[in-house]
Image 1: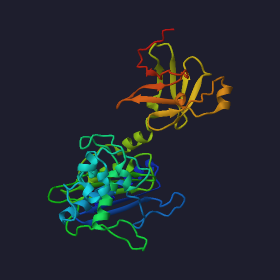
Image 2 (image 1 turned 60 degrees about the vertical axis):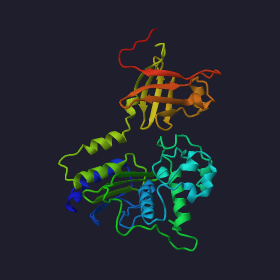
Image 3 (image 1 turned 90 degrees about the vertical axis):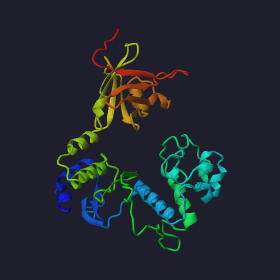
Image 4 (image 1 turned 180 degrees about the vertical axis):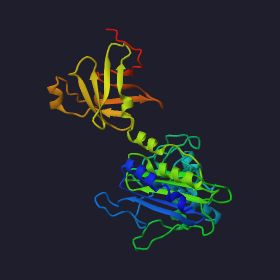
Amino acid sequence: MEARPTQLRPLIEELFDISGSSSSSLGVLHQGIPAHVAHFGRRQASRATPPDDDTLYNLASLTKLMTAGVVSNLVEEGLLGWDVPVRHYLPELGERRDAIGQYATLTDPLANRTGLSAQTTFWIPKLACHIPAIGEFRKTFVYSTWGYSLVTSTIERNVAYKHWVGLDGVTHEFPWSEYRGWSDETGFGGAAVASFTGYYGCMLLDPQYQSTIVVLVNSLPLVDITEIIGQLVLGTVLEENSWPDYIKLAQSVKNANMLDYEGDYWNDTKIMCYSVHVHGEKQLRISATGSYLTSYTLEPWGGDMFCLPPNRDLELSRSQWPFTSLKSRIFTFDCSDEKVLSFTWHHDITPGSKPETFWKANGSLHPRL
């Protein structure tokens, strides 16, 4: 087992370089025994010290699996129940008169099916009584860490085990079972990913081979390198004979396909056309076709949105009106799984006006004027 992952090191190093991460650690657990451990990069970007077995990473959402495992053990010990409403453990939740407050059991927040909004600004359990439900109870999946906050509060208040260092300096631990982990006779296994500001992670569980693969990085990489490396190592553990071209995959994701935005975009009347081109490493430039003077340099604004940053002097020097409304500075691209379809821009500042959509040409569009 040790030899197989070791042979992947040159490939993993190349993937690691593509990701832009400063540090990464990989661990393989086989039949309860550490089978392979490897570290890449440097512990801190500003220092050459490499990571080691004592390097700390933020596990983020990987702890969700741990939380579910803890609840399972506590149910087995008779300290909690799967079918008991959470309000039985946290009476204040019963202040909600809806289905969440009255009928939600521990299974519902663990499965993200309460419908609760993901409001995470204030981590106060009492607020769970007032968080709006944006999804239908037990019929919609809404990813919300609030559910796990409720589960954690249930454990702390009713089982009296803490998961942090108390004011007395004593570390309180979860009651892990000594006999069984996540993989049991039911064949439970799966994959989990984690993301947090400055961290990324992936954990893969294979009950048949009794193997666990964990990959962690200490940055928000250009590519989700943890999942790619995890799949690569898993294929090796399973003795797969062939796998995808992970280098090509990582490079394609890293480049983020900015070139996909390039093209000519026409309005519905086929009278006005804007050309979109990549500008620099992360900007787009939109120019009115036929005029080199009218152009807009856009900055990424999240997802498929781009923004024209306010710059009064630059806009006036180009005889452009300095828009004061944010809506007139946002360009929203509509994308399918395969391609970019259009962009929408609220360029008309007239009160009551609506945004206009410009459709990407497919080679058959021609101007009317």
